[in-house]
Image (tube, rainbow, N blue to C red; front, side, top):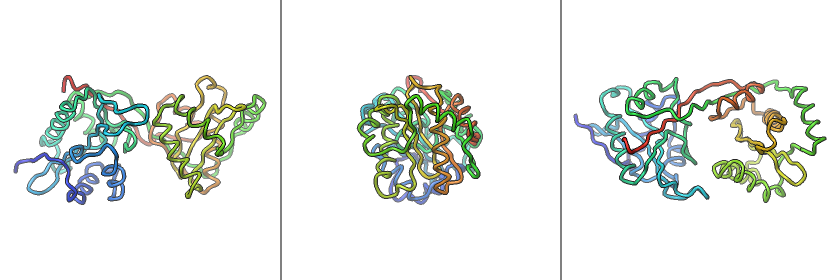
Length: 316
């Protein structure tokens, strides 16, 4: 049977979901997730999602995105493209289907003038930071055989919160910060004119977008699912921390004030708030190994390891 590579069609949805869940076994989705995070993504077009079809059956797919809508002041990033998910049915792997799909997707990126493609740090709707090095080891080897290189290796972490107690050192540190005029407290509406520029300036527009999404809920229906803390010194915001249900972060401190313990207090205070709301675990998808040491002090442990993959298109 011959393989046909074509753009996604609406009628493909049930078959695509079955294929996705069979190939991306550690990151399944349902129809609601596909519709909200893929089909309704502002940068999605049918040509963004290629499927491989054989005798009327979908046997492979690759989801690649280019910005159609600017991401705040980051703009359209016209030289960049992203692949956020891909897979071949387990029964049809190692038969050239993946290579055919990637060759077509790379050709579309090149035709659109893209110079670099990454897997998978796309915002706003990435599924995982990169390729899970343990769960999808064959996929990692496949990409490396095509010339992709590892750009970074983020990790995902998780913590059990049952029985969490604030360590004495955190209580003492919080008291010390208070003597320096630094207060850790929940965000209030009066903070917003200072908070949002602080986040954009110190951490970038993706973190601004993430904070805005949470704050729209916090100051409206669904507020019980959210914890949003700020570190305030006088009239300045010097740090913040956010959480939605069991998902922790992101959180950050003004680079000029790091190593003073502000981040540790924000972290533990947010975890304590989570437990008080009845959430007994905390997790996040993405951090670097340097930051992992701070999380480990709060009981987090590594649950997944990823490789962000990158390829220049001049040699595609």
